[in-house]
Length: 183
Image (cartoon, rainbow, N blue to C red; front, side, top):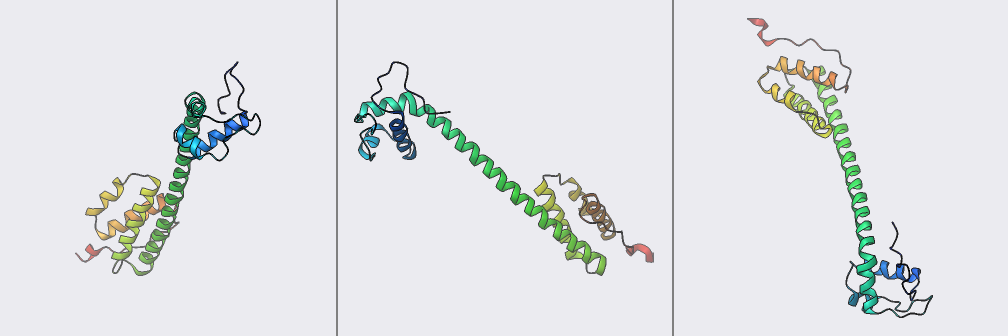
């Protein structure tokens, strides 16, 4: 969309270049009124036609031509700003998911090497890593809620399955000793 041209048959007292100059001044100065424009615009005489800018001419342009174009430009600015915000959020969530995967990998390596005896912090890290990744990717949290009533052995087995399903790591399940085996 371009600045609305002068209507057919309207007097050509001002060039399109000068009208565009006045529009840019008006738009970049918060779309203030004609008095502000007239008092503050550096060039008050059209350099092509020699016509001098008046308050009534500025008012006419603001209401007849400038406002519609300014609304269009404002919409375009909003669209670009929204797109930038979306892109920044995608970058942030991707970074969170990547860090969550690293946390999950570290936790699973620890559990594999150290076993369940001292794995409480690693299991917590793994759960938090999965939670962060799922939140970052927008996946449901219902699976994590089901973990709270499980035994350690069930918890580790479930977490291994969750990690495998998320394609984060390719792990072979390790043998986990069952604490109830003495009975």
